[in-house]
Amino acid sequence: MQRNYTDKEIVDGIRNDEKGVLEFLYKENFHAVAYFIYSNSGSEQDAKDICQDALILLYEKIRDNSLELNCSVKTYLYSVCRRLWLKKLYYKSKYTGKIDEFEDVFSTTEQADAEEKEKDFARMEEAMNGLGEPCRTIIEDYYIHKLTMVEICEKFGYTNADNAKNQKYKCLMRLKKIFFSA
Image (tube, rainbow, N blue to C red):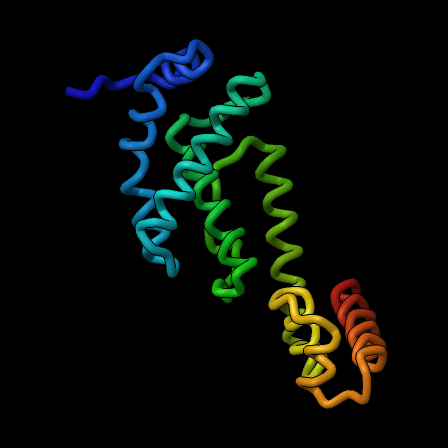
C-alpha cells in the first residue's frame, strides 16, 4: 500500500532524501499530466519525459531553497508540466493555438511574468500572421526550422546567400515593426 504525503512531508522528504517521495509524486501526478499531453499532440513517452523533467525542477528548487509554494505541490507540479509541454510544442511548431487558453497556478509574480510572456506570444503570432509571404516562411525557415541561408537561397531562388540574408533582415525589421506597433 502506498503512503500518502502532505505537502509539508513532501518538501521535507525531498530535503532529507526520503525514499519514496518522488515516486509518490510521479505516480500521483502522471495520469493528469499524461491526459493533458495526449490531448495536445503528445505520446506516452512525451508524458513520461515531461513529468520527470518537472520532478527534477521541483527537486532542485526544494533542495536549493528557491521554491515558494503558494499552492499545493500537486498543483505546482502539474503547472510546471503544462508549461514545459507548451514550451516544447511551441518550439516544435505544433502548437498553433493561444497559450493563454491554459491558465496556470503560480505565485503572483510568476503568474504576472507568465501572463506577460503569453501576451508576447500572442502578439508575436499576430505579427507573424500580418507579415505575409515570403517573409513569414523565411523567418520560420530560419528561426524555427533552422535552415541555413544557402538552403533558404535555393528554396526561394535568390542569386546568392547574401541576398537571402538581406531579405531575411528586411523581413525581420518588418516583423519587429508590426510586433512593436501592435
